[in-house]
Each structure stands twice: as structure tokens, then as C-alpha cells.
Amino acid sequence: MVIDVEGIIIKVTDYKDSSKILEILTKEYGLIGVIAKGCKSIKSNLRSVTDRLTYATFTIYYKKDKLSILSEASIINNFSNIKKDIEKISYASFLIDLTHQVYKQNNDENLYNLLISALTKINDNFNPLIITNIIELKYLGYLGVMPNLDGCSICGSKTVVTLSSSHGGYLCSKCHTNEPIVSDKAIKLVRMYTLVDIDKISKLDINKDVVYEVNNFIDDYYDRYTGLYLKSKSFLKNIINVK
Image (tube, rainbow, N blue to C red):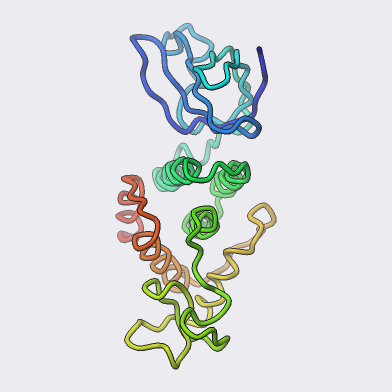
């Protein structure tokens, strides 16, 4: 059957001389495989709508559990600010890779909404590191390894003094040993990230040092508990370390 489906291309594989196989994360049908026949031809009307990061309404001949066939696409947002900035592209690429991997483990439809919201904010020039960290923290819930941010991870005390990836979240002064102490703002911020509605963010005015404290916790936490090692994350870390 022919359907119109909202989605974003998250993976592209060349197929034969002139075609591509697309993996599209869609709002209604989840992750689907689509072949774009002849799209690499200069004359093809699909040429400009079959690249990674294309967010559009796709008209396809849908075949459940098989490769569907792309007929046409109407762009919803071309993410022009992302595509002209190497830093933004790097964040977007990582978020797409991360979403792809998380979706394989938990195909919750809200992952699609979170990805689109994050890319839209990055395209609108919100701090890409903060937006990415928010997504990373939210995704931990879908992976089943959310850190303990209700109290001390060891004793449950509500009087916490730092973040500890090795202990899985907050630590209080009694349970703290040699873990680095982070700022009070970082302690509050990491919890706020898990609760905030990305679509409702209108301003991000956060001290750079605090942002990096939270980012370092998230990076180490992912390394310890998720088993996800993405090349796009390694590249992103290099960008962050240079800044």
C-alpha cells in the first residue's frame, strides 16, 4: 500500500550504481528499510532527499518487514544551520547514531520525538552539548540503567555532595571517599536534565564549567553501564576537548 509517513533518515547504504537503501526512523511505523531507486542520478527527483539527516514526509510503497520503495519526499525541516556547521553536524551525527542503537534495544516511539526535538533545538542554535547531554540522560532510562538521582546511591541520604559514575549516581558526605567533588549546580543540573521538556526550553544560560562537570559524569557513566561505543562519540569528544 502507498502511505505518507513522517520520519528522518538515520542510515544510508549505496545500492548498485544508482540507488540507495535508507533506514528511516518514522513517527508511526518505527524503523523501516526503504530503497530509493535511481536516486543517485542527476535527473532523479529523489537525489536531494535521500541523505542522512533528511527530515521529511516520505511517500512510500510500504511492505511490512520488507524493503519498502520510496516514491517522493516533502522536507519538513532541512536543518540548514546544522548542515553548514561542522560542530553541529558532529552532535547531530552522534545523536542519530545513539538513537539508532537505543532503538534497537527499546523501540519506544518517544525516542523519535526526543531525537527530532533535540535536532530542532541544535538547529535553532541552542548549546549542542547541553541538548546532547539531556538526550543522553533521558536515553539511559530506555536502556534500563538510569543513575540514582533521588538520593545517595549507597545509603539513600538526601544530603548529597557529588556525582559518582562508579557508584551509579549521587553520593552523600558519609559515603564519599576519594571521588571528585562537583559543584552544587552540577548536582542539581543533572537531575533537571532528566525532567526537562526539550520542546519548552527557551533559554540555556549555564556556566561552562558546570556544563562540563555534567558532561564528564555522563561520558563516564555511559562507558561503565551501556556497552555503547560509537565512533561519532569519539570524534565528538575530540571536538569538546579542543574547545
